[in-house]
Length: 451
Image (cartoon, rainbow, N blue to C red):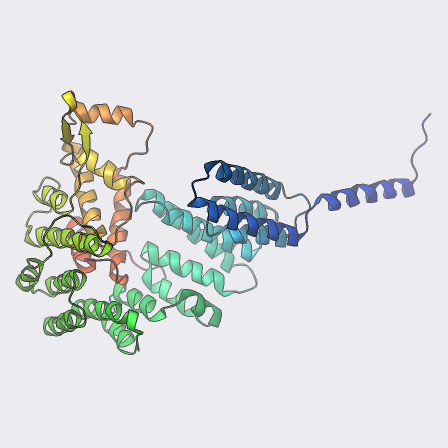
């Protein structure tokens, strides 16, 4: 009959097993070092031509994430240090690590922060769409959970402010921004606070308060044009046509460029001076070829100006109106396919192809003419129910059946993007964008702030 082990022998065996597990658990410092190194190396390889090296490093990342998700012997700090360096460039990995950490440490404010930032980054990598809105709402939930945990740090307030701003809850976003700014480090991280505050105030229908913020700014030389653009927009939103004209003149005196031409016309039209706006738009650069970056930018502003002209002259904003074709032409969009006998066919007139073009990941966001693209997307999407695809379109749809195709559920994301432009001085046509929301969504007021 076998002898029972003594209590001392059992305790000794347990100690040996525990020591073995701890020996296999990497230190917090080792985990942090590995995460930083992977983030740096992947960043360096992202723009390189060495695909083999990139794939090998991606495999290392997968192995690291697997180790962290398993998390044997990991403390809360292990998960925090593992995810933090990956938040900028490898957000999906950071999210997986942070969610695994939260499963073990559900009251970790820092891990909920990391989940919020990872989800925010992933959402903003999507085009304006239902997917982006859903991602932002999940990020909002993570930051709100973080605020229920301790210690009270500025990170969650900054993250929640940014998400609420994107979702259009501008009053609450402003309160979160002010809370975050009680910490000096938050202000240093965010930078250009006057721009952030003024944009939120303008979107909260507090244009005069925005003007007070803007007039108190002593701008650096490279901020002067941005500041004057924001002053011009706030003045137009305040409803003073004469002051808007004066602010437009001041902007054009400060810098006479295609950019300021479009911004001046945008504000004048919003303030009720449509004829003056159209006269300015008629002075846009002629369409043509470009060689330098400056010439390319001038062409983009020319397209934006032509689209604005078409919008200001439009009287019908229904999906079947001439505006959709006018915007397609003005924004210089094409969907060229090879037809029978080598003939090239441009399917840009098809609302089906246009929603695919504008809603695809291959269409980069372009601040100079995004407003027009968003309007064209909504008009094209709403024209789809009455559209009968041609054989060529049906063939293309069949070829791309595995792709994600935009749907009408993406329209709210486009409307949010149109509203958000007013707080971004490099986004052209911001006030025309607000008018577009009124025309495209007349029954829905701007998204109210949460209480």
